[in-house]
Image (cartoon, rainbow, N blue to C red; front, top):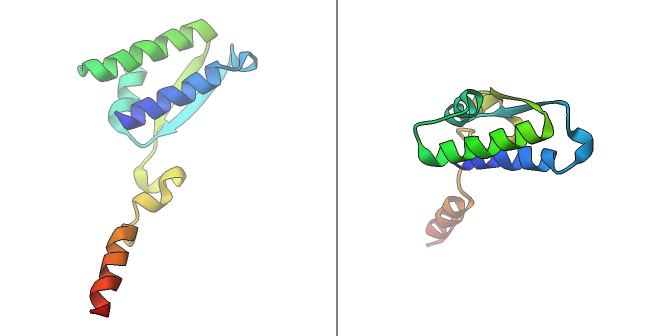
Length: 102
């Protein structure tokens, strides 16, 4: 749901500027479920379905062509630190340092 909300927020930000109406918008997402739901325009989940309806209203009102495409998580530059194998929580690292001192 967070990825879908983030996609909708980006669409709303794009919608807020009148200069960007009547154009094409390409957006990349690493969440396949929300990407397919927005592309189809509906979902079984009522929460995701309500986000699809809001997105549809914005697209129609601004006369946009909104294309949402899926990108693998490993290739998503905006999520760089969260999907690496060597990445660990800073709290886990601090906890290990405290245990080593004892």
